[in-house]
Image (cartoon, rainbow, N blue to C red; front, top):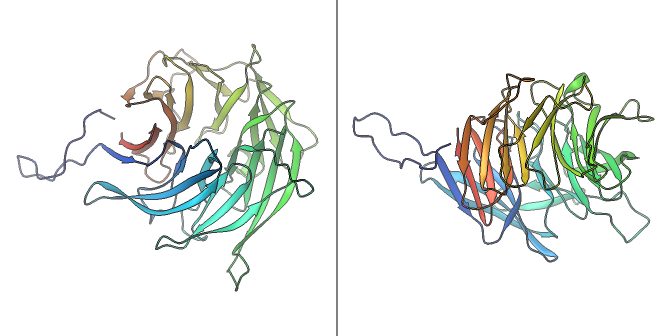
Length: 355
């Protein structure tokens, strides 16, 4: 993560050229939702969503050409309203169709058929009796069982969806979905949901919301939940993320906060770390896919920071790496199948950074 990238070409001493550290894609609109493809045969592929303050928005699939060092747009689709989140199916063995999902007014599952052909396979609406839809703030795709997705909504609920994927026959879509369960998760709007890898990785999930709490749920025992943290100022909590290697740790941050907190679920309500080097509000975070003690954060101060938290619960003073972008960073994602790479977006740009 250095602010200068070396260009392609042969080095002076004749050894193989050093690869560039940074690749950039400029979209025709402001970017908000963005995520890495998970399939191992689709390296350096991302989905990016527009942030246009009107009904008509876009999603693009972009792919880095490693020979030229340029991103190419592979496909573009219309999307109602800006996506609040985009995720590719967590399928690192390429056994499922090439699916991705978007949240906004509803949850939509799309299939990429290649050659620029993307088709919506599934439109998931759990409010069949009303024309009114409560927007979805976020969702998560279960890594252990990719047939499970969970959505978070401003109507205080979380919904767990069961997908069925099969072969498309005629006009029958390859993917269908049904509500497995819907629950009132918080006293106010729910802003994020994330499955935990604890207990087998299928049944545990947590949510955060406008009531300032992190709540832990178990699909096997939905009659009760556990509040593992409450913000002492009752500030809304915007995002949460589980450590990819140690399911005891979860990170979150509050609205307009410059600080990220890390919790140990075995010690509720007492953050084991506070990461507070940002000089403007935090907008995103992502745990390392391959390490239990690294997390990255991004904020309005143009900074992407990587932290080593190995010394918790001792105070963590400074990040180990920092990158300054050309604008306020509103999204950061760590590539699960390429742990040397992080993606950020700001203004109309997406950048991927090599660590």
